[in-house]
Length: 472
Image (cartoon, rainbow, N blue to C red):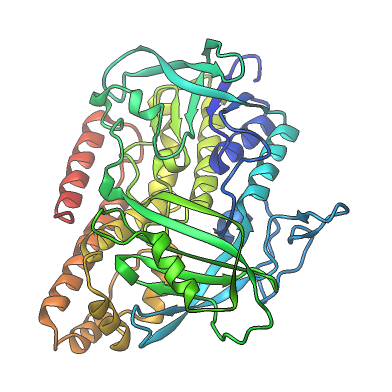
């Protein structure tokens, strides 16, 4: 197969590496071009990763217990440097607090905290061991199109790659090109606008995030539990003990100039907790994508993975797990297409079907995006009221934080009505969000099972209309 089918991946993110690894295992000739360096790949902090995504993509994770055990848990190597991808502390349960601290819930936190830089290196190593070429300091700057304007007719035949050390640019041919270039979607946005999937993400589809990992002052008495503060400043705030010596704290807010800087939120929180020292170990921040996926993740000779495909959980901004699952589904579709010697939109459509319907990830994320669009303007007092009245229940928070849209049932709706009757305006907004989310979730489950231009266009028009009703 490798003599007949070649694949180029733009970007060595979690999704691109899983995609390349699985293709190489199947005997397909695949090359990954990454503009960064091996030593600095991935974010320089720890991040929550879905246990289900790790398990589905072949990782033995410490799924149970409050303290992780296992060979990939971070410890010290022979040189005294941290080794392994998992932090020592796991979170089978997490306290979720109201913005005003008046109420708290306990949710099943189906994540494991990983060192994203260590995970990034491990994913690159796995792809290379499987047979993929991974070249750093090489940036994919453009796609090569053979023609076509509509989604079904456009054909991607290669890329333009720039060697960042020499400045040389080369045009390279491929049967499949994968865009894993992050939320700027460098390649997808260069497709013809008439494909319907080339649009850039809007400002409203981003959050602003800042996090810092600090040394812990263990001698200071400062009781503060691991928790996730939901709805704070129209966003969220958290603190996690990574181990005995390190604390991870951060915040995210809606991307809006009127909102406070998340770094200021974090610094204010640290100022009230003397157990968090001034010694910064790692951290960072910036924009975090929380919008919806493009209507299609494939075109002729082309697939989109990771943030370029907005495979992030809208309520938390966690995207590495979704990206890895996207890479897995995309690889399965490409392998099936290659076995038939095809690379057109129809041959690759199974990736769309699996993402939106088979796994329900796309449908869940779309429904949650609708909820977020409508509810993100609620005040601290509104959200704290929903906590106290148990309208935002343990079950609802567990599902939404874990990326699952739950269809409301009659008992839940009656409970909501009884709990919120003293605030009819808030209740109306909550019901509007639930109704919109339900319509969108069901619409995404009705995603076209195979490529059909007319059916896809009708589906896309309705999806756009449903989402437009959730945005001011």
